[in-house]
Length: 82
Image (cartoon, rainbow, N blue to C red; front, side, top):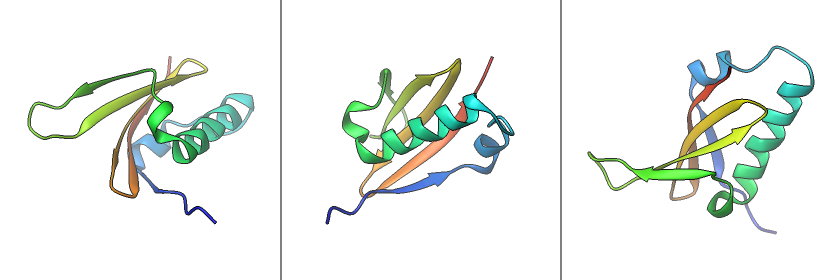
């Protein structure tokens, strides 16, 4: 069976998730989609000037999820809402 990359979510990003409700459920589903298919889960991306990593942004229900993929790990940097 295919092993999914490990998600590492910054603690400040977790604090920006809604406490409950449909938006929270949809955001968690989007995080799962990023984990399952990181190559096709971003809406836009850019190259960081100080490193070779590419920061990606995915939009979901009015929230922007910024993240990057390195090896077998996905780092969720921030989740920002309206």
